[in-house]
Amino acid sequence: MTPFWVSGFVDLAPAAYDAGLAFWRDVTGWTVSTARGDQDEFVTLLPPVGDGHLRVQRLGRGPSRIHLDLHVADPRAAADHAVGLGAREVADHGHVVMASPGGFPFCFVTHPASTPAPGTTWPGGHRSLVDQVCIDVPAALYAREEAFWLSLTERELSDPPPGHPEFRWLAPVEGRGARVLLQRLDQPRGDLHGHLDLSATDRGAEVRRHVALGARFVGDFDTWTVLTDPAGLAYCVTDRVPR
Image 1: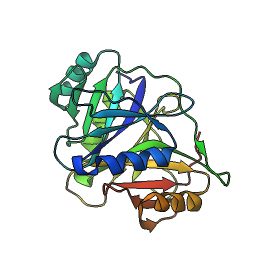
Image 2: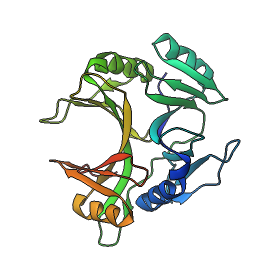
Image 3: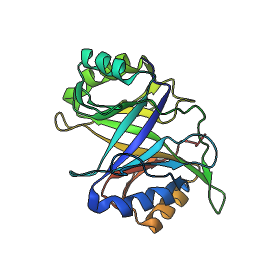
Image 4: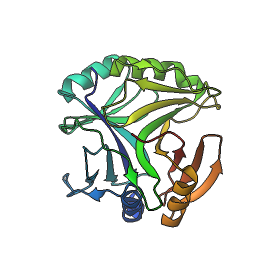
């Protein structure tokens, strides 16, 4: 059951929605679609070229978070298959809301998409792109979670980058929307969560741009910088080159 597209979804608590949506709109430079859903709770950020792979939801309650949308031809069949692999079905609204064996939220949807969006070029010449969802997995849950995502998506794992055995990508990823990265955390237990990653040709310039838009700087690492958005969600700007 290989998804034909993957989208990252920013789920925002009601009080954080307006500021959070404006932030991610300005970070991407993309436009906001017409709202959809029973309570106009869903929007897509639309690139000028290509198909969107970043969406925003206003939650009815609960804290802000990140989830994945897996675009498939038959959500019902995909959900049944996922349950057989250890996932839990949460709700069927036509799109099927799921949780992985460790509790990471994701959905099966049918929205069509096929053309990846390129990075945005900013004044000064650097480019950036929100292009990755990282699933952060406590060490004790990692083996089961990795096996689940491999079986569910029928993908292979990339080799870890030099010096960082905790990171593995689900591959192939090109041409299929957002990339998916699995990170094995140092702490043995806790809740699974996700965060967004951006690729940027000039990380320093991109970080300064985000801070000016309202992000909070958390820390620099060898090839990435951690920030939080106005809703308090952590995310990273990386040295990966945007497509």
